[in-house]
Structure formats: C-alpha cells, structure tokens
Image (tube, rainbow, N blue to C red; front, side, top):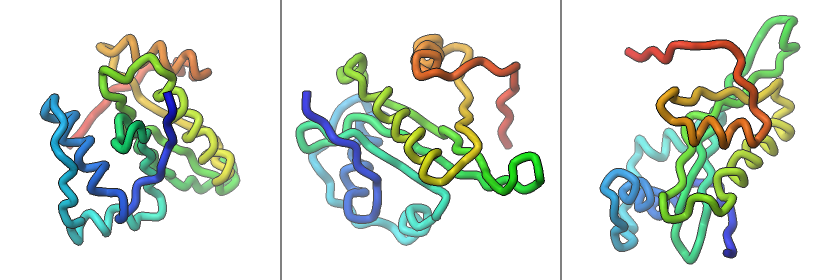
Length: 149
C-alpha cells in the first residue's frame, strides 16, 4: 500500500482534524476544510511541536505527536529529549507498518535535532503498544506513574 508521511501545518490541518474526528467518533466525515483557529495556528507555530501523519488514498490514517524538550546541565550538554506524546493508527490500517514508520520519523527528528534520546510512556493496559515500542528498540526503564492536573 502506498503511503507518505507529512508534517502537519496550517495548510493541511483540516485533513488532520478530519482524522481526529474519525478517531473520536469511530467514523469518517467528508473533508471539512474548516478554517484553522487562531489558537490552533499558535499551537502549530510552536517550534518544539512536531506532528506527522500517514497519508493513504488522500486521507490521513494515523499520526504521531512529538515534543522536543530542551535540557540544561552538564549531563546533557545542552541536548534535550524527544517525547512521544501520542501515536495512533486507525484500526483498519494497523499491522501495515505505519506505526513503525511514524516511530522512524521520531528517530529522524532525534538525529536532526541532535537530541539525547526519545522518551515515551505506554499505558500498562495497552500491551500491543508496548510490543510495538519494544519491536522499535525501546526498553523498559523502570516504572513511572502518569500524573496530571
């Protein structure tokens, strides 16, 4: 299956938003071409945000959201980490290598930014995702609690 990975920006955001709608509602909607809000333009302009989506047959079927967090201190020598904030592929398109291709995009970004490494959290109730990350070369490194306010 032919596919390409595109970086999300203001010009292709409406297609991305259609995919988010698909994820949240379980069905696709017709391309919306909704205007990009000022707040979304501000978010997309953040130099530390990198969102990539998999394009198949003129629609997005998965995405990865990456954040670069700078680090200070002699241990890191001014090189931060890439964090995988979110990775999703539509259920009917799983098992075709799209998630691995998106994870390779994270590795490409790590190299480009000369980041120390890539970090991520995986839900203990999501063993399939854990298996994907292990397949991509990630190792369990202790335990953590995910906390949010």
